[in-house]
Image 1 (spheres, rainbow, N blue to C red):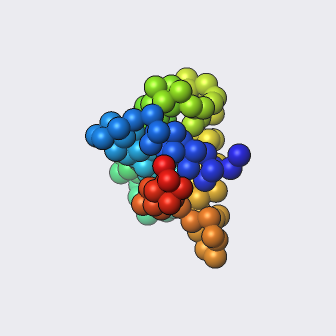
Image 2: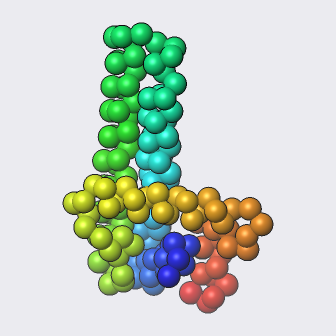
Image 3: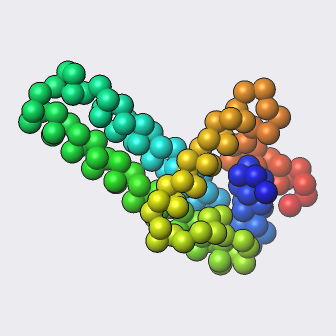
Amino acid sequence: MGIKESIRTTCKSFDEAFEGNRRESAIGIVERMLNNMADYVSAVVNMETALQVARFRMDGEEYRDHIETLDRRRKTAHDGMIASVSSCNRACDMAKCAKFFDGDIGDRYAVAEFAWKVVRELFDGRVGSKEKISIEEILSDMSNDGI
């Protein structure tokens, strides 16, 4: 199953399992998780860019400080992304559906690779695709499906 289908399946499961504010909160967890994945990938790109370019613009202490700041941002984004994946998986457990991430949540590299896979698939499907997805579209799909 592809990422977009996993998103739809997870949101539909939450829609069926929860009511009212709990339903909205559970579906919001999915949206925050996806955004946190994109934020993490962006933090990695920012860090890699700085490692390649900043040394030509900055010297010594300024360069080290800049890299340390970017590394803290990357780690914070990574920690936040892992926490949101874990929250989504807990909601999946409560909804009695398959976990969105079925790997070892304690394996930071595995979660990071999964985030890249999710972001890449969402990015690849953006132009000219009939598979574009947003939370609003998921909710609309659910109401059109009679859910």
